[in-house]
Image (cartoon, rainbow, N blue to C red; front, top):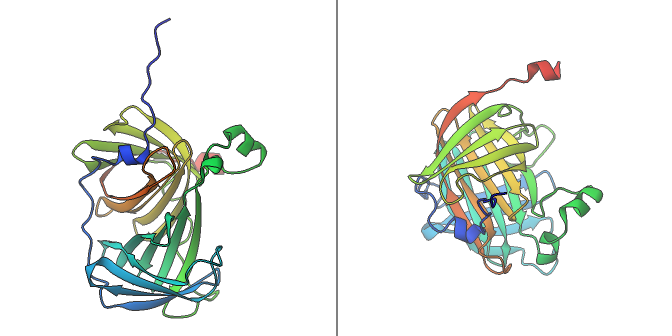
Length: 282
């Protein structure tokens, strides 16, 4: 029997070392602006944006999981604008470099969606997948908290939010992240999608991972996924009208569970085909 060959999974730091090229540039549109965001989980935070990619946040109400953590800090952030009025703000917490915060700021409806992602420990990562099945856990050790908020007003039952959606389900989309990096996504269901590397160091590699989708505006979506083999969170805003995405990939630099890397990504997209499942849901 011939020796079987396979494309190995890569650590995030190795994967992103020469990745991309189609990312959106950082925008200073938010500089000079301060906003209070009241979230549905009880958090109230003030974000103040300064020149040089600096942002101060202050926890006005609520508490984190770590009582010893500061309730305010100065961060280095990156902001992109995929469509006018919609911004994606992203940063690694200076006080906790294994945690990132991503803010989708919808200045059209004056609402926000926050994604707080935390890297797993070595012990959490090495927990056998079958044990996760027995314990009724997600197969990935990654964890992300998603909260919805109102900008400069209290959050209430009447506050609109970016709702979970099935509008991507059935779509097969090719994403060109740069001249040498291309992937396709096949959106299978509300909680699972398949990624497949067409071009790049992971060419031929694929997997099916847990995900969530939110509708932001007409033809604009927030897509969040958690990978299980190499602990990774990825998130992108997708604009099908513009044919463009903007987002990030966050994971450990190497297999020693030491440094993390938070890498901007962006792609031009092509909708390859779409499968309808209306008959299966009737």
